[in-house]
Image (cartoon, rainbow, N blue to C red; front, side, top):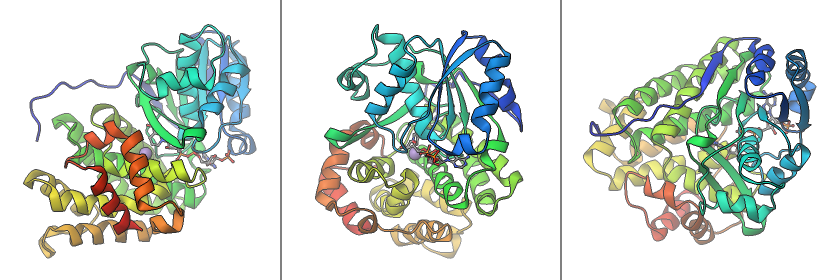
Amino acid sequence: MNTDFDYSHPRTQVRFGRGRRDETGEVAARHGDDALVVTTRNAMQEAGFLDDVLASLEEADVSATVYDDADPNPTVANVVDCVETAPDAEIVVALGGGSPTDVAKAAALSLAVFDEPPSIEDVWTYASGEKRPEEATPLVALPSTSGTGSHVDPWAVVTRADERAKVGFGGDALVPHDAIVDAEILDEMPADLAARTGFDAFCHLNEAYVARGSDALTDANALRGMELVSRNLRRSVEGSSEAREKMAVADTLAGFCEATSGTVATHALAHAISAYEPDVAHGDALASVAAEVAAYNVENGDDETKRRYGEIAETLGFPVADRKLDAPFVVDTFREFVAEFDLDASVGDLTDATPEELAENAAEHMRLVLRNNPVEVEEDDLVGIFEDAY
Ligand code: NDP
Ligand code: MN
């Protein structure tokens, strides 16, 4: 355990509770009176939640412009269009999963740093890591999935289609000021969305737990989060409201872990898959490589890394005492877990891109995340992992 560390806790004021979307107006009004509301095309409209949020804003005398064209796996072009919709907004409200939340974050940054609505190249100077975000228009996030932790973490994930680059970028400026976690919104998730987003949350937790960036306080959030996933994901997928509330807590703890520790090679490989196949959902991409990354890390990792993967397996209900803690054991654990949730597609099922192409893409666009892997991993190693997962 790393007991020599700096710990920076996320700044978000988080409100948990059913029906609390009605507080959006009151929260937003503290930051300004002209809001840009960001969501995807159908789900929040059909369930009436967009209307609820707009009514709450209106009641608080906050005017609202809606951008409801965010793609799943959102693009930099989405960000540009979003900012053009309301170039004078004083506050950004994200209603939806990680996709609209990340568009909202990049839009909040753009509103603060550019005088005119930006071009794709302008936004890319930040997304590519060339410049670091130092300010952003205040953001209120209402998550509609329990997966990305984006409502409390400092990252935004966007894809630049012409470069086939899916990248994460951010900094403290992109941490939302407020998050409203209203489980009535989460209750609307269909089973497959609850499963794949729940697996994303589990990856943030287990990756943060083994990452080089982990520390003693992150460990507490990660272990408790994994325990909540293990106890509640099955029932959440079956539709239990109570289990969905618990998954929302796990997702929030996972977001804290992403802020204080971060992800490892699993996320780097998954981003390469979605860079080639924008229609492949993030959770599906993660599930196709998670077992093989864990096996690589156990095979090549130090004793502490191995011990941590053993704890992860135990949290999932696979006692290490029954078996030797080696790569095959870890592969079995992860594979059984993903199969239980019908997330057992292989990389070759998801894309025709070759292991070499995928490895090159991950090495080029996910350098920082790869550096956070507990074991050194070069492009050749990534090819091997992709081959195992193909
Ligand atoms: P999305 O936000 O992409 O949501 C997928 C689709 O699910 C939406 O397009 C929407 O449909 C539908 N939907 C969302 N919520 C509900 C609901 N409550 N009920 C019914 N349908 C719903 O999914 P994720 O939350 O998984 O976000 C994925 C994105 O987040 C990826 O780009 C991923 O890389 C990124 N990510 C970001 C992280 C971060 O730290 N910032 C961390 C991890 C992942 P419709 O379009 O029809 O409205
Ligand atoms: Mn993720």
